[in-house]
Image (cartoon, rainbow, N blue to C red; front, side, top):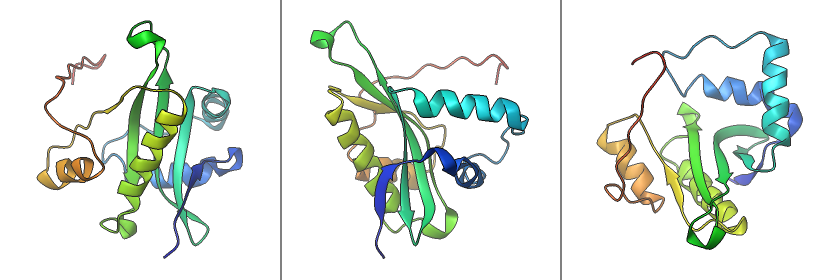
Length: 151
């Protein structure tokens, strides 16, 4: 199976939203179309945000968002943050997600990042092994999160 890793195109929002249903079991409803289009326009035109996808057979089967964050330390080198990593359930455990994360890492290096971070709320050993197989190391930083909804 041939997999292409690339930036998402502006006209692929509906494909991305379809894939996102595999991301969260309890996600909030999608905003109205006007709001969604406004958010999408902001994401797709922000040169610091990279919506990366894995495509096979002309279908988007995995995606993640890499944000390149400007930084005043480390000699002014930015760092990357990866969020919303998802692979379609029918394409898991085939190396596609790992390949996408490696593509995200290379995109970060190409943008001058000195490190790339990601966090996951999932605690299963299989998820942690997945991130480790893509080169990420757990236990090197401690994450603290506060949410407006208190959860």
